[in-house]
Length: 535
Image 1 (cartoon, helix red, strand yellow):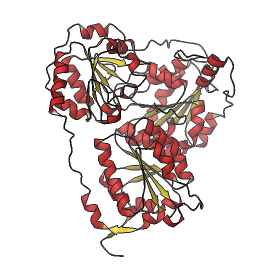
Image 2 (cartoon, rainbow, N blue to C red):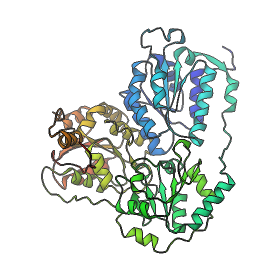
Image 3 (tube, rainbow, N blue to C red):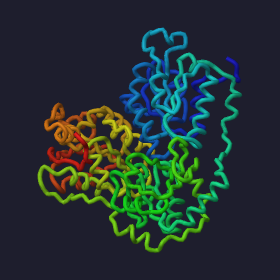
């Protein structure tokens, strides 16, 4: 072998190392083995998940918790297909993850041999792009381009599919000489910027509406400073929560379908919305009136409003930091007359405990932990009760909502934030979708507390069935002994069912900074608030 050549798999790892990738979540298999051989000798640490769905959700959780890029990998055929749920989850919420799959050798593709399937045809609808790699050079250039894409363009999963022989092939090392990226800033058109200044300067009742794009831009500090300098209230979408603390007097909470009174009042009575990294989705516009809109987002497909700007949020705020705005002095106090919190009673003392009381006790004892939601009734209770104080501290799947996100998502969050504890709040149905990842939590001794809200049913589906059809079908769960199951994975656990027990159990669990599980038996008949629907 010539000294100036490099194996494709080795080159890929070098690119990931150069871009400060620390972890890859995955599960090995025959067709991805060259990549694993390269990883074995690298600074990148592989996290062995127990299922590929868990690998994708963990990469997603890592990305959300760090506001950076997550990476997951699998082998061909069944391994790649098991990733699909997690990739679709990331796609719906625009989460930047790199998905690397091995494939059968080039000469076996398309011949319907063992584990041969058109992987890219499956991944194409749920990724920004799915590369079917034919040569090492093509794969290396594609991987290098992904990091630039994530920095300056729309975010979401990008997939690279490598036949095993391509991973083993060698290339000239000179292709690696252009790893460095040029600093690039998308300049806002000067005339457009003048119009932005004009709208802002003429506004008397402005409102900042921040979404996930502001989080990915790491714009929290500059956004808060801008809002404080001009006394502008700040509303958020679901995914923008925590961009400024919801305890801050300028925060009006969430806007839209599940919005707060203050958020929706501000949205309907402002004269200008400065939309930063948000989408004006069907849920968001419920809380918006007929004001002027300045919309800033890297994703040009979602831009709409009176002035649209394809830009990074943080860079845009730098451009307008010197604007002079004289708002109506009564505007902020007018908005603050309305509550920026949801009105949920949590003072119940009954046994079995009400789920909203259980959630309140978990959150009150959470002690700056990252909260990871799964899907179901508990997600709504968390949404309505929690006060989010920092970006990326409440993680959940919003657009796709798969059951089973919570535990692997928490694993990713724990690796992204080794100095913080993580609480995964899951339903009893959710838990059984990905419970095998307790083995991963135990193996890496992660400070994750799993709280199972056990109502012995698929409660939200039961509620919809009752409401629409008058009867229930196939939603009652005969659950296993969750405590014994946790102990089988060598994770300490406790079962509680009474008010007051939960907060003390959470305090105790978090003090260990080790894996722990709490099963909370709640009232199986308690319902969540649902929007009106037609039968």
